[in-house]
Length: 214
Image (cartoon, rainbow, N blue to C red; front, side, top):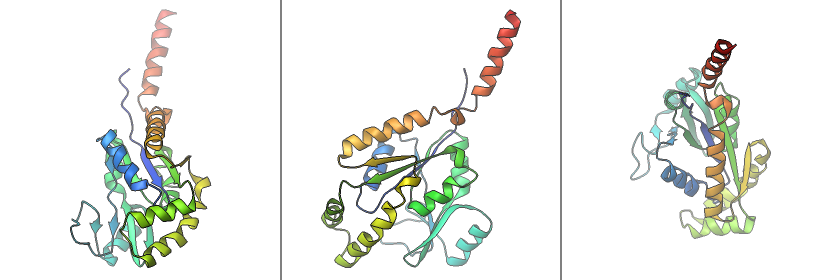
């Protein structure tokens, strides 16, 4: 059979500190063909960030124009800035058989799963083993001040409360074990019937062979 695989839109969500970014990096190390969806944002670049690598940096008017033209798969207003996922590069990737990884919150996940590409989505939510551990991880990574950590903790329950809308939910109490589970889920979903566009032609060929025999 000469079927080609259609790519997946792999959505990975979690509250801050639950290990989402680390696991996203591990998945791309496991399969470098997995593309990372580079979001567009209206916030200013931070030191060391490059346009098109971390984000596509645009102004408010350009962002709103893309939303109005339905060029965003999902978008949201977070902490005073707009963020969104441009549709064109995602469509191009999955049509060529490449998976696209999204590191987004529940609102973005909901928009993508309700989009025209919903048949090709795989959504996974990561839960922390406990709220105490979640706070500890945020403090240990040393990236945020106390006020920011408190804000992230306040937002964490809102994120967690939407766990039931995801295809899979994993408790990330061990990074290696969770990584193995993610790989299993992705490998199995790649074999889903909707991801194998060549199956219909193959079955037709089998039918033709069968009719020749009879």
